Length: 504
Ligand SMILES: Nc1ncnc2c1ncn2[C@@H]1O[C@H](COP(=O)(O)OP(=O)(O)OP(=O)(O)O)[C@@H](O)[C@H]1O
Ligand SMILES: [Mg+2]
Image (cartoon, rainbow, N blue to C red; front, side, top):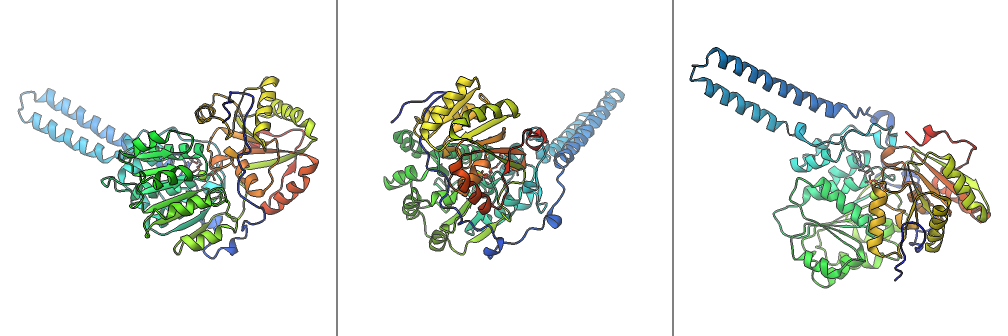
């Protein structure tokens, strides 16, 4: 194991890259029998981020006013008829009525974060206009959803939450950053019976950092429920996990290898686990993970429900789907593949000019936070060192670092402790850091799935973002192929980039 680590310069390992072989995704919606063309014209419902909350605030305000008026009336009555013995009773009645009213108004008492007023694209605004309340979720779950700052379900949440609640298997495809995590976490939390002491849901993800992020989201959404969430991944103490599993766990999030290990030891009992969720499902079905997944499924009951989510589904997923999913409901919201909010550029460079080019980008771009991808561990370490020498703040992360160090970098970068993060494909999938507005492919990826997931690290939840690709002579065919496969245009970088296209 390589104990190298450090905030700036060095380590890493080519993290394996995203999905496999290009050209396999089915961009044609008609290829999917259950795909229904969304008509943005018809389905688009103008989102006014303030409306919903305002309504409740207004209602709360009205209640408060009523209470104040009642109290004023009481005080006046008290002054006028201080001797009247019935006054106490009147006051009690009025107070209890006011209490009833305000306890009904549960939404007004939530601790809702300030609304995000940034511009959002149709990727998340083109909804049917559903409300989370339409799904008859537990009050405590709704409280967690609203306190997370979610006002209304995104398109993928509208499609998958009601279907998942029916118990049907799902294979769902939706663009990066459009809310797939909550699309499966919400039904999972809803279905868990907190009075039953058993693992009822397992969420599988391909990386440890994504496991931490996902378990955190489950905890936040389930904040008002008594659901025990546990995260388990490689790179941590197995003994600690075993000890933890002696305590109640309802929802287990983790990477396949560790969960399989615990299941085989008989420590992690999955006989009551009626829901298996595979996030980044196509990555979980790559040769690296698929054997573990297949073995893990054997520990689940026969009537389990399987939900598969990703932004990319190569046709290779079909075998697994036919073998393990029962009449799956297929959702495909990707009538186009790339995000509407992301502008993509390339700069044609020689290998030895890359650093100079990056320096120019740093000096010209308005970077809020950036993620810079390299194709190997060594290149990540070297580049991070060079960036630091140039005088820019920089962290790096890759799979060959010690887990504690990885966790610290992830945590600190998420909290904005540093502007730039250099990484391998370890961070290509699922990682959600809202402040990232620029992604740079210092090394161009080899396939379109990896490209799509990498650039999807910016422009989260319909926001604007920028992707810049440094292209060498050797990359030119890959550039062309990936553009074709994704049906997108990657333009040559202009001398000046308008901030309005990636900074709102
Ligand atoms: N209904 C909602 N309202 C507001 N924000 C939301 C909503 N749903 C999700 N988000 C936010 O959108 C961001 C992206 O969500 P998420 O990470 O689940 O996307 P994803 O579809 O899984 O993306 P990826 O394919 O990259 O994994 C998160 O910051 C999340 O908090
Ligand atoms: Mg995700």
